[in-house]
Image (tube, rainbow, N blue to C red; front, side, top):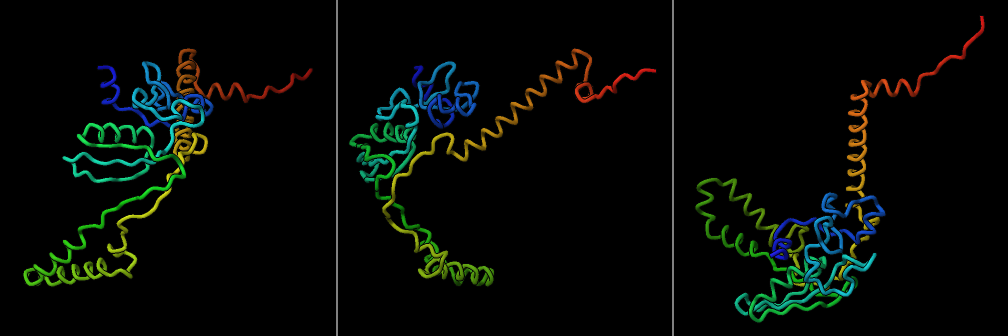
Length: 238
């Protein structure tokens, strides 16, 4: 029951191991809200997939979390199609659980960063749909609004022109891609931005604590600053 609760509730994305986050003064606890590659608990945000994760780098400092390259075959009831892809380890574990619950479903780990895989993309059906719609309804559209028909024909011409930069026919069906590497916390631009925000909030919190302390003492921040900067002239004899 506890395991199900962990999976169903919201968890922050793991950014690194707890020690890496602490080095950046980021709190990996549930109060701090920064996920990490560690076991979740009452005081630790951790990773929601920790209990089912079986990756070799699990919990290893400066190695997890990481991107992984995978291959799966859907169950027969879901089409039995094969796909390869790249995802964060915790997201891959969720996909693995989904695929393996399908009768006949198979999920395999191919490798990690740098591993080549076949990135499949479906050619948009909108090419065929748009072409068919304009041809079948040209007369009716022209009667309603000739300007709309002209605009649709222009869009259709671009979509079907393989030499145009916005052509929908340029979308590849499949291409070879390479598994990327997940940046460590100190290299992660998103986390650096979060760190700046956290520092600003901490500074504002400290200022608020100081303001309340001064209020209890009957002072203000301005009084505090004046006391610190006031220059007392030396005494002179008469």
